[in-house]
Length: 191
Image (cartoon, rainbow, N blue to C red):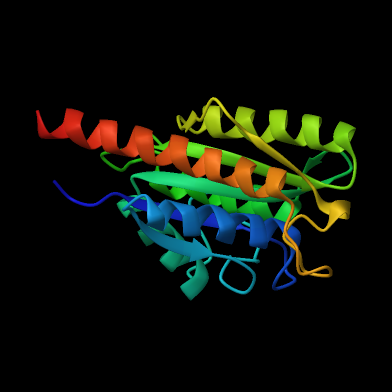
């Protein structure tokens, strides 16, 4: 049985953003669980607005779509802007339209772990709901647990050098659920 590939997508246009770090922490735990990972963060995400049926042909868009086609699971990490997901992450999800005619259209047969980072709880809740709804509309399976990371608390120890155990654990739970589902899907496919 092939080792599941979990694709991480997250961040902002700023390298090292809280949401990109959340994706990286999650993927690090994915690797300890025996899965392979592929990460798309700042500079690796297509930034040109998606044009339906055309994509943009950029290396970033082509690499992202190739990774998603191979993915057994996905981790999405976004900042919450004004109670919703970032335009960058929404644009990336719009590119998933290019997978519509694949054998596994859109995000079918893939668990998708959702992570939202924000300074306030209200923004986290509404953005997480929005992200999960978009994943569901793309035929993905949002994991039961979605992580809400309080960005203002220095969750990954960037300033203090001491990561917040609750933020670390939230990312680990997302990793565990995505890997669990990916492995179960692989067993089903082998039967």
